[in-house]
Image 1 (cartoon, rainbow, N blue to C red):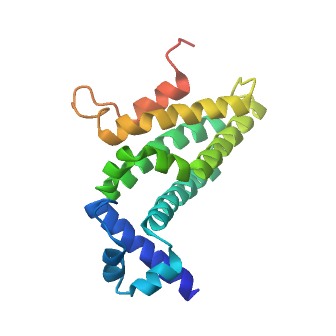
Image 2 (tube, rainbow, N blue to C red; image 1 turned 90 degrees about the vertical axis):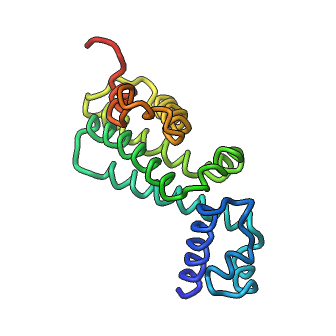
Image 3 (cartoon, helix red, strand yellow; image 1 turned 135 degrees about the horizontal axis):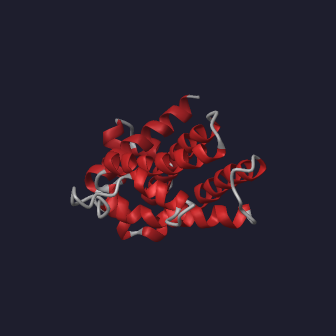
Length: 194
C-alpha cells in the first residue's frame, strides 16, 4: 500500500511540474526534488521521464472514465444519460486542461504520444456510449440500427471537438460562444425538424 501511495505522489508531483514547466523543461531530478525523494526512489517506479509522463496522462484518463461511468450509472432515461454524458465529457475536458496548464501545450505538440496512451480510454468510452445506445433501443427511445458503429461515430465526434474546445476557439467571443449544452444538443438532436 505504501508503494502505491509513493507512486501516486510521484505522479502528482510530476503532473504539477509538467503543468507548470512542460514535459521538455522538466527533468527527472526536478521530479525527485519536488517529491522530496531521491532519484533512486523515482527510478524504482519509473524508467524514464516518458514513462512517468505516460502514467500521468493515463491517470487523467482513468479519472475522466470514472466520472463518465458515474454519470451513466444515474437513474435516468437513456436520452437523459446520453445528454449528461456529452455535457459531462466536455466539462471534464475543460477541467483537466485548466488544471494542467503547460501540459496542454505538450498535448498539442505531441498528439501522437497522447493518442497512444489514450487507446484504452477510447475503447472504454465507446463501450459506455454503446451501453447507453443499447439501453435506449431496448426502451424504444432510440432508433439505431447498429449501436456499435453509432457509438464509435459519437466517440469520434466528441473527440473531434476536443481541440477547438481546449483551445477556446468555441468560446472566445461572448456573442458567438458555444457552450457545452449547445454542443450536446447539436450532436444528440441534430438539426432536423421532428
